[in-house]
Length: 326
Ligand SMILES: Nc1ncnc2c1ncn2[C@@H]1O[C@H](COP(=O)(O)OP(=O)(O)OP(=O)(O)O)[C@@H](O)[C@H]1O
Image 1 (tube, rainbow, N blue to C red):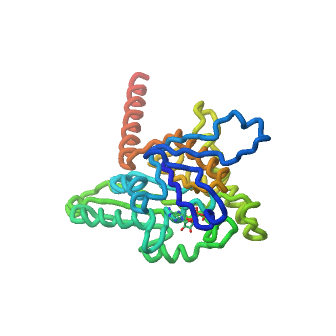
Image 2 (image 1 turned 45 degrees about the vertical axis):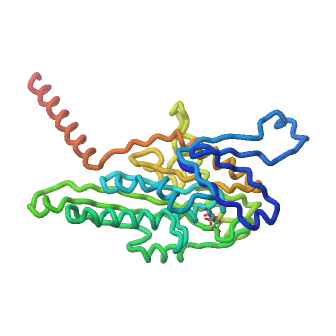
Image 3 (image 1 turned 120 degrees about the horizontal axis):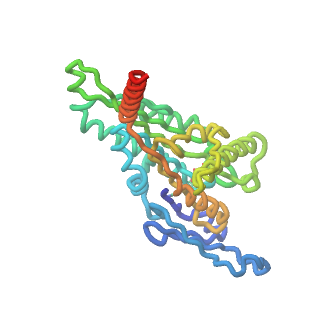
């Protein structure tokens, strides 16, 4: 789990917001509750400061390149070796998810950097290996941009360029060995999949002042994010006894492997440092903190096949022995 704290926006500073989230070191963030309600007896003795620890903490000084290097780059060789990986951006509306995942042409985010890295790595080994890359959401780079033009972006009171849908980029890489192919021999191929997800932001209907279609859209977004939150809660339950309802939304069905299956998963949580967004910030940090408890099991596709064949072989041997005795 990585955390990115975006810079304060000009309008937040103009409207009197103060920064309440601070990076302490590479792994720690501290938030300070800005409320100073003297009548709130229940909170009077509580510390207003809370610390959270994550694998990576980045603040306004982190560039797009730093963010990619720290949260996604290490996954690229695994994809080429046949593993599955998912990176998803999580956070409230306006917290900086699209900036991280997509960025801009002159300042590209994780999606474009991961693709560039992947194709560079494939070029390095193309004399030895043959790759087949398939993608949904894009086939070549320009379709990523086309896809993003199609994506509804609407200003809401909470974010001027709010994404009104989840964006999912799935890159599948199939790899075969040239020399084995040239010799005309049968060979297993390796298949790795990288899923990059820019979730639509959770939002409070009251904050966005959305009406009509936009409000219904917001409700759908929130419902799927609620289902995601429920799955994270159930999966992070230490007793392991809670039922994980992946079927609650399309989003959780899509993320099933990323959350509890055969996948290396990175969650990049996003928060705003501004005091106005303290409640959203605390919610995001709570979920990100829970997400640290999630465990996935990563296996190679061909290794599974081998295990299956081996198990079948053992079963037949046992059945053979039993029938001899009978
Ligand atoms: N690290 C950053 N550095 C500079 N600007 C940023 C950063 N993160 C976000 N921003 C700016 O903050 C604004 C909101 O960010 P963005 O649209 O990425 O939020 P979001 O979480 O994707 O919101 P939504 O869920 O509503 O789509 C944008 O103008 C974006 O350029």
